[in-house]
Length: 491
Image (cartoon, rainbow, N blue to C red; front, top):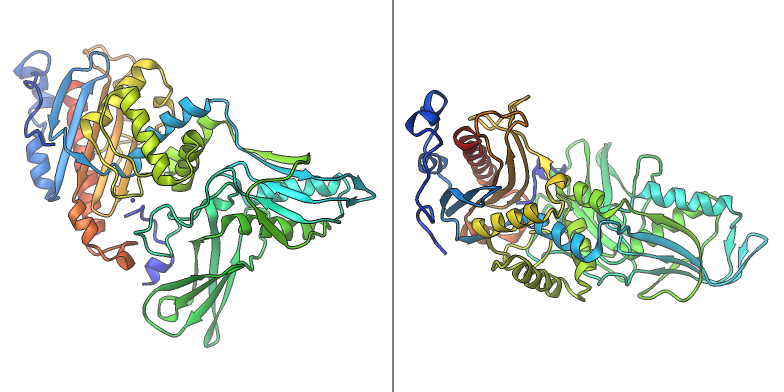
């Protein structure tokens, strides 16, 4: 329990062709080409059998130039993509929003500032930025203070209607997991609050804050109480103006910390802004939440990085809230279900593949896409120069035990995805630039999943269910072995 409480570094735990859809080509040069290096190359079916995953294993690898299928297995089997869905979301957001798009969080004044007093309302206007951090908000407040603002005569309004309000991304996750936060048009710290505890005599001292690297404002919205019990690990209750948590004393040990989700992110952001303002000598009244901002003059703003940089960080760290905000901004839909459906329709029209997306992060287990359709999307994006490949993370070539081989000349850039008993990997295998032996760039997708086993896990146990860590390890090892096989035979 202590390991769970401390937020162990594990990711989110978010028809059939039996053979290759066309005859398997021999490696160039016939039998000897797989040759001295190739004699030891393991058969793909043997690798799948050795992984002992159960459920389904579907994969495909294509020549990135010709589109020819080099190897495939159950490539038309639709499985949950987990966070590989974020690669599709990136393409969707880039087309709909444009590479130059930046999210802006603005401060408006509805009246003049006279002798340090704003004769009107102060409005904190969210623009749907999923990346806003406490330090940025603190710097914004410091600029307002430097400009002479001391107090507000009217109201302090927080407008969060740029995106629809939702209390969680998916409803089938434990209440305490930080990868399943709420979201709206005004977000902060990926909509998480920092919970820290220390043993103090026979009790524990606890704190909740919105820490950045330079600012550590305390948070009153989220409140924690230690309760003498072993289970459940956490309980949560939302009230109108605060959120009550309890934690099991049996899980605390001597001390620790973890991030917890916030379910009222607009109010959370407004409270932190108010606390930071007070520290800078600006007196603000209690915040009032509104969906739309009144007309006013902009007196300050924070902008996000340009969209490609936002997406690159999202793909690297697999931040669910960033994916959902980008997808919702791209679709303009009023709910996550409608936005997922809009992306599904866009994928069908743009790439001619049949998939189903219930969200933009892959956290929802009901999303489905096949390996061959995922590879087809990557191939089309590659040919059209849509810019996804430069955004993908270098995952490295792996040895037979799954460790990255440092300095390997073959480069693998890809997006991984993980849910309980679901694991996926899709991307590009690129040979050395000076390859003289006919090496080719390849596009691949590997989906492994046992959705029935995933769905059988009780919701309360889904942060880290029994058996999942070993299953994920075997799946990732299989993915590395398949990529290594393809690089050896065709790369």
